[in-house]
Length: 71
Image (cartoon, helix red, strand yellow):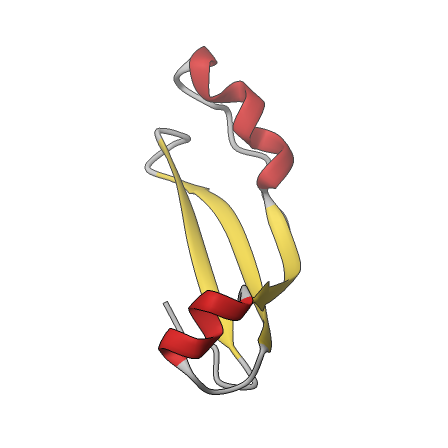
């Protein structure tokens, strides 16, 4: 993935800059939630955060694996 440096238009969003990039995620259900939703106890996938609209918004893309949803 190539990264393009975006100038953040709202300085209040600056702390979110650390989220940009690609991440590996894992969701682990609590025993009570797992009993409710069923399926595997945990699921893994990847997430990517990037700035859009000239740094006005930070968007998350989520790629499911092991039963995690794409979003």
